[in-house]
Length: 465
View (tube, rainbow, N blue to C red):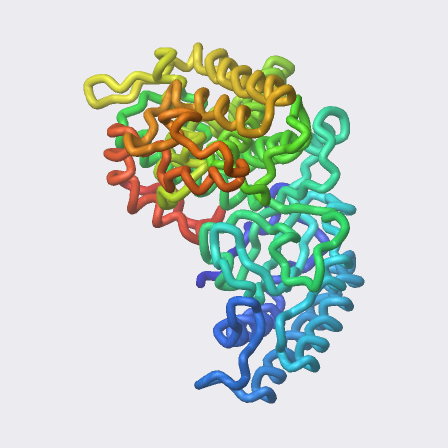
């Protein structure tokens, strides 16, 4: 993996702090972590009795090598001192316990990046964790990151979009679990003995999101022959502009999960529900960010129009054709947005060219947001199963269900004596298949989407199609 470098003097960089990734101890720490990772089982333990397993002393030497490197690097990030002390203690306890399932609750509870959201502030993070949309196993990862918290964003959070746990972040460098599609650092992914009473932070890598967005959007625009206004073309050429759009989008999206007319049983991913419910929730949060961006644009916030373009392009071009088709709720949300805009004549696929009515796009996108918000508001007065069917009706108004779907046949086709969570088993893995348009687009963009694995702000973004 290539070292990730941020340009010296980049916007938001702290002028006084030495960059962690330039210190000689950083490659030592990376090497120690990368040496330990292949020895770990799915749960993060090391089975010393397995065939080909390293000796306990060999693993301990690598742990001590990692500890020494952390202690060398810690003075560069003094705001993380309590966390690094707890981290060293957790690593030694893991080694002393025979490398069993790791428990890093103490160091997790000592890490508080959201308490000091200073733009450009570095953090050195090491945890046993899975990386969402990356590595599903709880391996050790080391990542150096910077906080993205410019004054304009801090002011919006302070005055309009209170979100005290949100951390916009960018990569400096990382180990193999982040050389993937993962663009988040979430505390719930970390190996601990018990979940803390509450989480106090959550980080999203806006540089990876922006770089991925630029590469896929450029390819989609070229493939579909979309005629871009000059301001959109300028945005796609500017990584910094895209990062600013994504960090604002993410901040508003993140808080929306707990705002609005929510049914008492909110749509949280840990609950067992049909995947279109998750798709509608994610789309609701994105469209709320879009709606707020329309308001902010009218008030002169420079980044707001870019947020609108980012939501539309990422949802239309990347989400539907990314990942497999098994309960792909984000893909479903993108399909629904495209179908809605197409039904209302905002997008047209004519003469092998995609035409977008840029003037009407905000109004009609907000209209879909309103339909989803009404679904939620009405859901407060509905039983869960009735609400699920109402949501299915909304989606199937614009997207054709699979011809073999039981849910599409209505309540009479289901065994309603079962509890609602059991009826989820009757949902097909691909309940709403891709349209012919998206089947063709998926084939053309497959290679481009695969190329975004591990992408950062400093990858070579443009891709010829």
